[in-house]
Length: 242
Image (cartoon, rainbow, N blue to C red; front, side):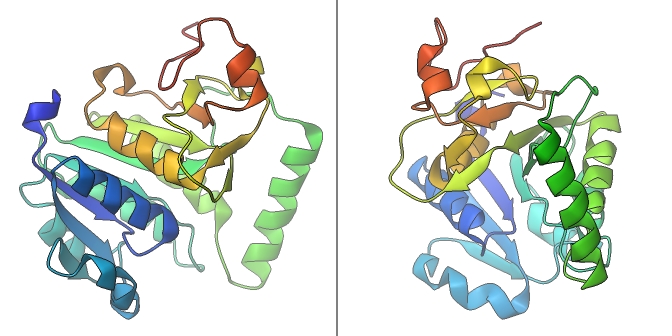
């Protein structure tokens, strides 16, 4: 989808830190923006009063999503494994079911998601995910494994999707568009750090980058040592097409 065809964009999970950055980037590009967030979080979007349309409600509510994504050319979705209620997979299902045919659907998740099983993780990363999954479920805070289910649904769909897999995140001024690779463990990703504002930038960029359709790019900041050392790497470029 070329940039001139993107006019109206929905940000699902607009009130969070990543969501707010995506709203800003989308507005900077001149898009009409619809934001979805839980009703209690609407005040977090006060800075955008008069500039965006807000649809309050749970993001895993199909009716909320149906209203929000109507006539949108693209949908940017933060897959949050919130509480023990299949929130991430419910959100993904609602977006997949109700986005208009041909819309660009961009989803965010972490590096722990793997599409083809070829990602290579350090033992401590895998152990940390397992421990966090168990503890989060015990205290009924989150279902990390539900994010896996959410992405499984996306990967199996015939929509124009992209799943952006983020490294560790930090705050700070933008460094530019991140670089990406198909597999965690590739040398370019060794820095394992991305500015949150740049994660959001990549999400918005993906709306008009057809090379990312049905890809699950693992991204990293363009100023990390691995990215700088990789021959020919430049912001937004794929560095592993194998």
